[in-house]
Amino acid sequence: MRPAARHAVVGAGAAMYDVRSMAREKQAAAHDIARYRRAVRFLEGLSNLPQEQNYMRGKARDPSIFLKRTRFFLDALGAPDRGLKYVHITGTAGKGTVAAMVAGALAADGRRVGLFTSPFVTTSAEKIQVNGRFIPAGEFADMVEEMQPMLDTLQKEGPYGRPSYFELFLALALLYFKRKKCEWAVLEVGAGGRYDATNVVEKPVATAITNIDYDHVRLLGNTLQKIASDKAGIIKRGSHFFTAEGRPSIASFFEKECRRVGASFTRISPQASHNQTNIELAGAIARVAGVREGAVARAVRNAKLPCRFEIVQKRPLVILDGAHNRIKMRAVRNDMEQVEYHRLHLVLGMARKREREAMLEEIVPRADFFYATRFQTLGQEAADPAYLLAKARQSMKKGANGGVYLDPGRALEAALKRARADDAVLVTGSFYLAGELRERWYPEERALKRRSNF
Image (cartoon, rainbow, N blue to C red; front, top):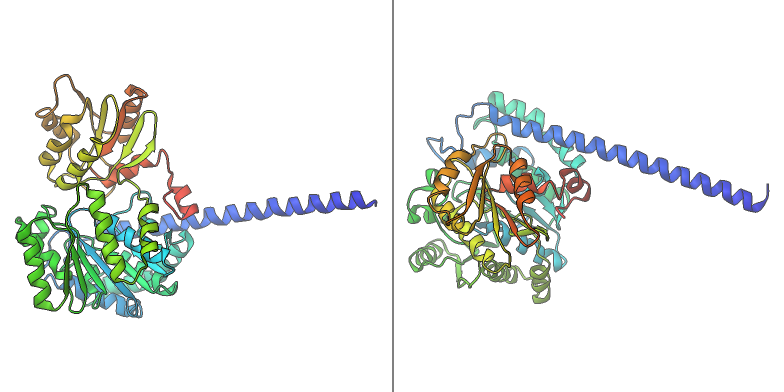
C-alpha cells in the first residue's frame, strides 16, 4: 500500500474513533442527566409526605428542632461542614447576589470556594457550585443515591424525623464542598436566619444581613423588629458582621446584637442603586476574608447572575427578573427607569402569599400591556392570574390593556408577538416564573452540560 493510502486509512480510522468516542460521551452525558432528573424528582417528591416539623410552614413546638435535625443528619454523614471557612448571608433583598459576588471574589483570588444558594432559576444543580461551576449531574445523582438508605431509616426511626428538602440540599452542598476540598463556603440563608438550616454553622468568618423588609411574615413575624431579630440570629461570636440596612433603628439593633455576642460591626451606606449597594457590601465582606483588591474588582466586573435584571434579547428588549417582594420590585422599577424603550409589556406572576398589592403598585403603572400569568412549579402556590389582573386594573395607566394567561409560555408568546422592535418585555414577580420562561433562551439540558447558567 502506498504511503499516501496508508495515511488516508489511518486518518479515516482516527476520524471514526473520534465519532464513536463522541457518541459514547454524548450517551454517557444523557444517562447522567436522566439519573440527575430522577434524583431531583425523588427529592422534590418528598414534599408530598406529611412532616410534623416543617420550618417553612412554621410547624414546630420548638423551632430549634430544625437545627437539631440538620446537625444530626450532617453528623451521620461524617460532619462535612467541619473544617470549612464560612461566609453566611441573609436579608430581604440581594442576599443571593451578594453571596455570588463574594464567592466570585474568593475564586478570583485563587481560593477554592463552594457556593450554596436558593432558589434555583434553571436547574436544581445551580444551587451547589464550586468556583462558579455547578455540581455535575452524575455526581449529584450518585450522592442522592448514596443518601437514600439513610433517609429510609430516618423516615422510620429518626429522632428528629427525616430532613426537609432544603436541609437535604444543604447537606448535599456541604458534602460536595468537602469532597472537592474547598477552603471556603458561602451560604445563602433560605428564609430568616435564627432557625434556618444554614445556621448550623458555628464559627463563620463573616456574617451579613443585606437589609430588612416585610417578607415571610407568617414565619418571621409581622413587624420589622421581629424580622430583624430572627435574621440577627446568624450573628456569631468572633465573626465580622456587615449590613447595608438603611433604617437607623434597625441598624442600631444589629450593632447592639454584635456587642452582645462579641462580633465586629460594619454598616455599608445604601447607594443610589440597589446593585451598587450589593457591590459595596460584597466588596467589604471579601476584603475581611483576605481577598486582594484586584480580585474584588474582577469579581464585580464579571458578576453575571440569571434573572437579576437579566437581558436575554435585544429587539424587542426582553428582561427577566425574579423580584418577589416589594423592595425588589421597587429596585426593578428603578432599573427600568434607566432603560430606553417605547412601550412596556409586563408579564407577571407571583406566589399567592406574597405582598401582591404592594408589588403590583410598584410596577404596574409603568406597563402599557399587562399579561397576568402564573408559575407552574410543583409544591408552590401561585397567585390567581385573574386576581392579579383585577388588582392591577386599579393602578394601570390610561389606555393600558391586560389579559389572563394560565400558561406562562402563552403569556410570553403573546407579549413577544405584540411587542415592536423598540418595546420592552419584562418578566417578573417570581424566580419560578422567570426561570421557567428563561428556558426559551437557556434550556436546562444545556445548563447541565455546561455546568453554568450561561
